[in-house]
Image 1 (tube, chains in turn yellow, brown, cyan, orange):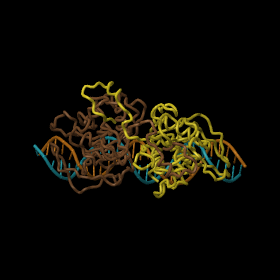
Image 2 (image 1 turned 180 degrees about the vertical axis):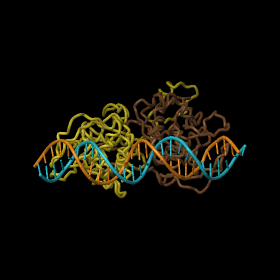
Image 3 (image 1 turned 90 degrees about the vertical axis):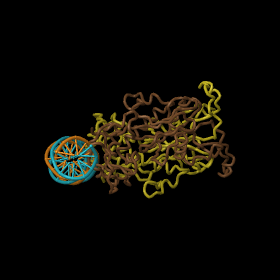
Image 4 (image 1 turned 60 degrees about the vertical axis):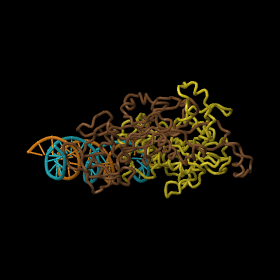
Length: 278
Length: 278
DNA sequence: CCAAAAGTGTTCATTCTACACCCATGC
DNA sequence: GCATGGGTGTAGAATGAACACTTTTGG
């Protein structure tokens, strides 16, 4: 940061600041976009019998306003830089992301949120130069969202319907460069599951080791050896801690009741759970 | 992104765009800051005899302009959102980062650059709401920079003089929140050395395994077992490839000439080089 | 009883770590 | 020669992968 009108020599900083005109710059808009990810049963597949193991979904909204009206997009909106008629300024970027998310989709927002990166290529928005700070939010299985302001529709959409991942048709359907942002978020989530305890952010406060394994399987798109996974999780200090409780048990055809765990204190996993070796 | 004046129903997008006023928003500035890191011999330690193994340094500038005139800061400056009197718009954020870096320090810029994150807390800049997109640039040992526009002085400063890392006195000396940004960059670099081939970005195009190990040692601040490191690097596919050449040899007291390698094609390391186990 | 799911034991292969040792070079 | 640094061998420990097996539950 930082550069400006060249100060008169020896001008004190206070005097400099009072004479400073913040409108002297070309307008640039700063927005936040939220890639909200969760694991939920695939819509449309009936609840029939066999255990629903869940697939990754992303929260999308259909744009009610120009530009790109009618297309699916990540929920997002302008950051409030200063107090104004619309409301008070956002104290920081995460606050802006949560405010925008709740305005557009009315979802609860006490969830894991982290910054992904900022997208600012010229021409990515036809209106003006827009710098968009993308965030990733991880959530346990949540109810369907209600559409809010400027939003025609909001829904959890399975990754599989978005053509990212395989090939390079990343996000062919989304507005602006949101397909790219989504693909980056997915890659970030996949990679962070290896080295961090992030997977627990997809789960409710108490969960079974099997549920944790299903998160890994859903995000990585591969099956893992249940017995070895179980041991490895328990051998990773601080990943999970035993609650002493047992799962109620669901599942159709019987089976032992699993122990329930909660997220442990560790943010980083030592050793990591590598997906490399097939 | 995205939100706006509510469009008249059925207004076509083209008509909407032509009536759009980009000045209708509160001013927010977007800047880029660059955390340029390199490994170089500690300044002040004479070239006397024993092998110079290098320590991490960061490129800092002393602010010639208000605010915070005279304090050390990361090189940075405003992004050019649109073409204007100062020059053409920056096509994307990396272009802005490289332009700003060369304006402030006149260093070569064909180097590894990646985005770190965006800092936008209210009050981080006293002039106005500023969103700063921080970048990390990794460089081989470069000559001392020349100070450029708005810069009183530019220099490679050892990490050790900045009080980050140990304790939590992160970056006590830097302007704005640059100490925090630097600390985040250092942590990112440390972590990325484990999982990516990033370490080669600190080295010239041909290097020895020992030089590579010294990068790891400098960044992680610990010594590594030379023989095992050597084998592990060669066992990681795509990390380095043999050039067939041998080092000229420097070093005072003799020693075999080391083979020279160049960076291999791999960006990610499988398996990673974990720093966990002491 | 039988099937399904949780969780433990055990074996074998692979990888990591430490240390010993040989190779090539400067003085 | 001898010290220094590059590079390889190798034994023992630790870790990982696969598979068998026991335990607990639902139908």
